[in-house]
Image (cartoon, rainbow, N blue to C red):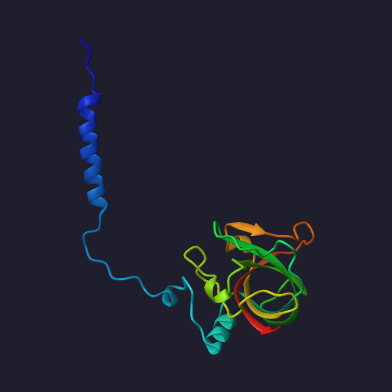
Length: 178
């Protein structure tokens, strides 16, 4: 005669699993989540004054810089995953902090989206009034450095191996001129 523990153990495991699920359920009512503007997540509607305040108070570096080019394949629509792309800028004016030179490389999160709609649950603290990137534009940006401290994800860097300085992380990007 063979004795098996499988038969009496299975119902006990099912009961224990069910009890575990019930014990994890929160029976107390919860308050609704704060609106996206309060958390920084999701699209943030913004006035010009609001955008100027955000660019002046975010990041450790604040610059006005000209976007020199957009390399082929650097910005593309990708619905399956989010990414950052690195773009090359010529610094025209430093407002705050100290960039490493007058040519800097800046990573922008989901560059296909307008900056006001780029933030999401994964990267809640990016924004700005820029609607689309075009070579020659002048941008007023709040930056952090290095990008790896602020973004963990796919990075398209068409300049890889061509520069030695850090890659900056664009926290806020406003259009100054076309």
